[in-house]
Image (cartoon, rainbow, N blue to C red):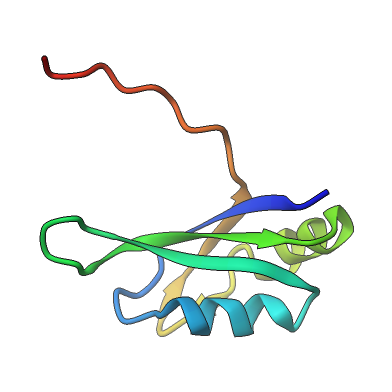
Length: 89
């Protein structure tokens, strides 16, 4: 079963492809996406990576959490389910 990881504190220039390559060095990546702002289309500085195997996801957290990309220390941990936001209506 695939495991989803949250990746934060990314440099704004980081692409989904770079994220994929970084995690592919540890195991099979099912998807890697940088979250972008709806209005501007620019990176919001975080993303999500889905690893094919739980063991690979655990290894990725151990190896990459606190590592440096583009001069920034990144945060890598297991993604939590998205919380429901109250609607503004």
